[in-house]
Amino acid sequence: MPIAARLSCLVLAGLSTAAAALPAAEADRAAPHAATVETISAPTPQFIYESMLDVWCHDASGLMRFGDVELAFAPEPPFVGAVAVVDSTNTIIARFDYFPDYVVKEGVFARARVQGPAEVWLTKPGVYNIVYLIENQPVSRLPVVVEEKTAGDDPFNPQKTYQFFGLWQRYAHITMNTWKEQPFPVLTFWAGARDLGEKRRGEGFVATLSRDGVAVGHSIAQQGSIEDTHYRRVTTSLYEPHEEKNSANAVPLLRDAWMIDGDYELTIARRSDGTIIRTFAYTAKDGRIEPLPETALDFEPAIDRITPRVSRKNRTLFEFHEAIWIRAK
Image (cartoon, rainbow, N blue to C red; front, side):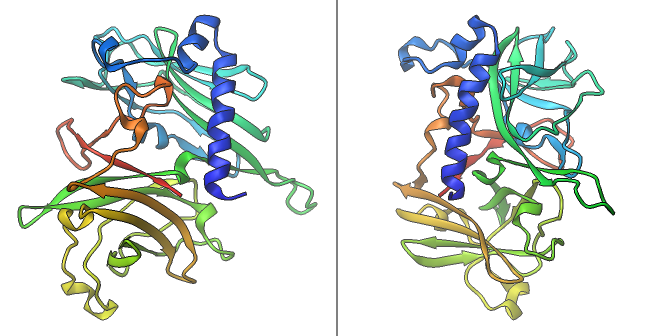
């Protein structure tokens, strides 16, 4: 089954699992229901999707470990939040509370710290949901699948190993850096061991942006790599078409070139064999990228909203900026 179809099935399975596993009042909140802009007086709290995708997993052992998480429209402290892991039998198999005091809070954003150690071993293949709660109400969730990679039937290596699969392959986002005081897009996506070839070792990639079927830019050689580990955030920027020998003098592909009206495909290919591991798509109209429906503040079901903001990296200040989320085909 194609990746996009598998992920769509995963989301649907995750919705029923998350709703059924929680108390009735919480399940009502998780289920889809009609809403209009007029009925929303203020944005409801949301866990930042990027920080949810950054959950630490160890594929070989099935270990999942929770750390700090970021929120938008964070309620005033004391914070009454938790993260729960729900299995395919609708049972909450682990739950970890967050400290009532935020690590930091600036404006509507905050960072919460889990009361650790917050670890769970997921060694039974199947669908799970990571459900984030505030006041015991589900607010955000991340469905994942655990697959058995080796059955442990090798007498010389009897240990079973596992692999996580999920929405890390479905989403990416675009934020803005600057180049000579002009907006310079930065692409962020998640990649890991599942994306490598048979040699199973870290390798480089090439990102290529096409508009209406014509390539308009690509990443430079030796910029970023994919590691033989669980999915991790990978960032890259694109440049106007050039030969690899001229990479040092490549001209940045600035924001306007990403937003000329048209239909776009953004592919990620392994450098070793050219295999395309991701194909993201978006449409630009009237000088802007059309946003995904799930990034709207009134999207329903609310548990699947993706906040269109991410924290600025490598900064001493706790700041957030706009993230334009795109989806894989």
